[in-house]
Amino acid sequence: MMGNENILALVLGYILGSIPFGLLIARFAGHGDIRDIGSGNIGATNVLRTGDKKLAVFTLLLDMGKAAAAALLAAHFFSFVPSLIAGGAALFGHCYPVWLKFKGGKGVATYFGVLFAVFWQIGLVAAAIWIASALLTRIVSLSGIITSITVPIAAYFMGYPKIAALCVVLGAIIILRHRENIGRILAKTEPKIGAKK
Image (tube, rainbow, N blue to C red; front, side, top):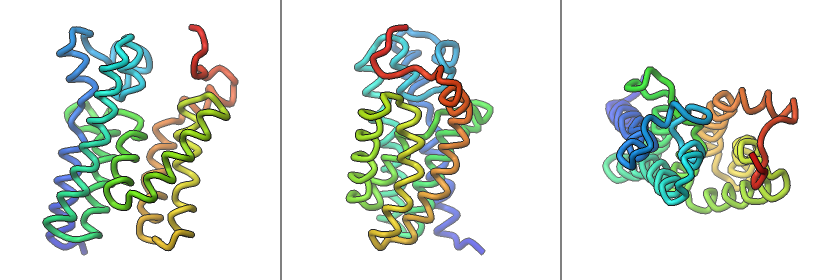
């Protein structure tokens, strides 16, 4: 059974993670409902499709920050395991926010936020893998998928099985959220970084 601390961490993480910063920021900036353009997601990649790069970076940082905040708060008030639960719940909340009928973002930014909060060295490994994948494939979605697959392995061999287990669960959610992208990747129709529309 889950203890009170774990339940509180779960609720805290979900609530923080489900704050749709991309949707709110784009709306306040005068871009309307971000769900009506591009992929319809609420994350930074779709905010970038408004043409406002600063807004997209701001969204990216806030989506990372909310997951990091959930994990750090749980670590401060409870302990390590609740921090993992809070971070995981934040990513789930971002991907499946109850306020938006469970239709949220892809989870990659929140994934990085969780990793940097619970163990920053693994966060750096994840960032390195993402950058290398992006340079090699020039496909943002594929980079996120590759990162979500390889980071659990890296965490395990770095001696952190609990973080590795968390990464397996979060990676599965990220891959599930990218199922349409996977279809386009296989069909070779997924847009590449820098490609003309």
